[in-house]
Length: 311
Image 1 (cartoon, one colour):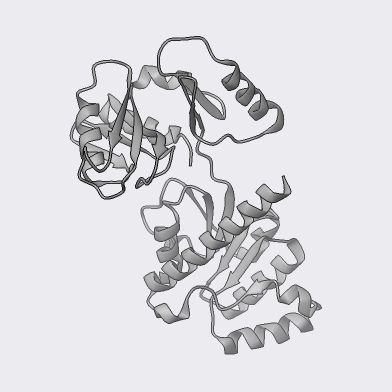
Image 2 (spheres, rainbow, N blue to C red; image 1 turned 90 degrees about the horizontal axis):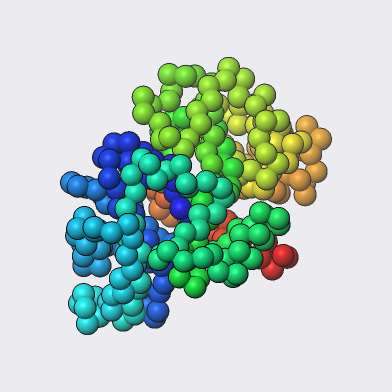
């Protein structure tokens, strides 16, 4: 979760004046968390703060905004007829191309009303700069503070066939993944590739493994069992956070034997995951992608909790 400056820039370039509506505070039950945001312009919008009547009213109010920014609080039950039972405070802000220059750094902090920067915000910004601490989106003493949205998990997808394409479709909208997509043939990639995805055609894909971060996630699903094996072999010698291989139990048994013959220990080989996803969902590419996405998101949550506890 964070301030997506790139998305705001694209929207402004396409539509001019854009209103950004962000959830600044939540009390009780609400459809989205603090930091969830949507962009609104004349004739359209992107992103979501929870949908339904709340989003409709926020978009309508945003288009009528005649001051630089405004706070509004909404009781979801009495005011909007929703069943969440809580209330949300929204911050609506007008942005134009002239405003983009001030959105610098890794944390976007700005006053809701013109007033000096409070000590609590100063301390938070100093900690972010000095210690690399990424603050949670929050409203502090009349200021809104949000980290800039950045992908936090490198993800390498090996293969641009039907399953590879489905995985990119499902995973590319998720902000935490920085996706590198590799295939032996340039022609295998679709004409349109999401902006957040880096496509790398390579005649020998396995030779790219040393360029992957050692904490990356990898999904191996190429057209060739031989190439799949070569990638597994290279990754075991390189290091990774997670590496999953598409295939059957029979394929995995053969790969374990071949990787063992290549000198990898049983403990090393066990770090690879095969099969990946949720087999009970079926073998349709989109079904595989949904299962794999759920597996990766659960893994990311576990890793985040582990980092928090070790901090």
